[in-house]
Length: 168
Image (cartoon, rainbow, N blue to C red; front, side, top):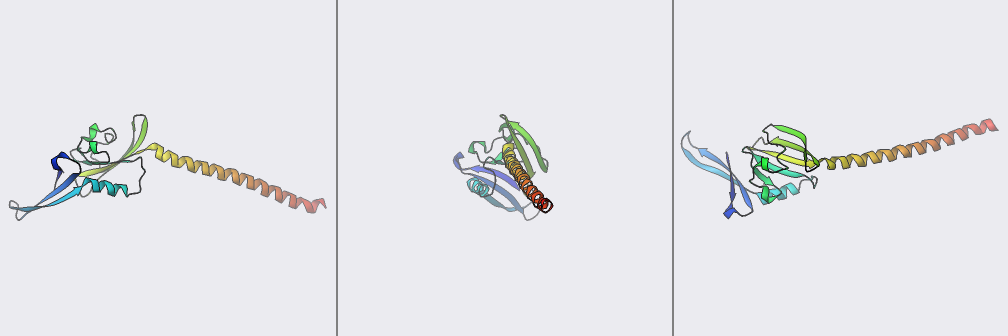
């Protein structure tokens, strides 16, 4: 099918229209099936997914145009011109890599849709992952120190209780 971008009088909300022609024969066109997706409603759907607040989500078509972004000004722009989506401009089926923008490191993930002619792109700051590992490292350190202290007390108790019969 063909994907058409529609904005009524060029005002938001934009609609993403998917048009699939229906043919009676190879030549005779009977009509078309049209699916209109309100991009505002699509944004609400993405907000319901449990994702980091720092994450940027894009849907980019095969012409490298952004058809969904949380930032309204980026919609319908060329992905190569938008800094956070410029990290992934290839058409691979799956792609994950690190990228730096304005001194911040990001992890980009991209996957091509199996149903439509676009790919889903996610950009998450590396700090999101490092914050998680920092808290886990701190927890492990606290558990290690606590186990050392408990082990010292147990060792002291065992040595005193085994010495008492010998001392008498």
